[in-house]
Length: 253
Image (cartoon, rainbow, N blue to C red; front, side):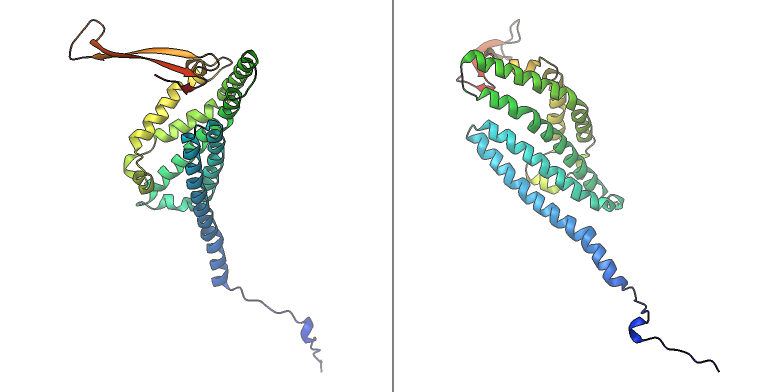
């Protein structure tokens, strides 16, 4: 008779059961919980950076504003990456429009703010630098030329961002932005204006900085006319003023 030899208990193979509930729970935590926490932290950082940018603007610290813009762009890029984990929301009919609009806004905001935060700070630093006027003017001119060339390189990204803004539908506007006073019409108008001004900001010698008094101060004469009293130019001259711009800053009118 054959004798069966039993293996020691420590050498026996144990079949482990797959606990699907734990696996599904772990996947849910990784796929939903972690991105949600990342988005919440990103929104908190974006609000703090927006407050910092507002404070720097009121303090006329424009270099700080431009630096904070770049930080805000990186934060929005992180939020957009986290939001991509919720792409399944684009399949739900009642939520599809909100999700698509939110992703378009995040993409366009990241692109525009990243370009501004990359191009503008060197120009502002040159404008606020000290030294003899001739040397400062040369530094500002060089910074403006470099900024124009960078804008030429970033032009496709800006055009793509403008296209995404124009695709936003007013019925799918996120309530958070609506409560902040933003409207789809205002966003589209601002994006369209930025796109129209784009040719004046690109190239080796961009036009827009010169119009803003960089590096040479500019002075503009503005006339207000009353269309109720018609004249050949459009109306009776009721008021006028001189508007000086120096280094991108508005002087005393």
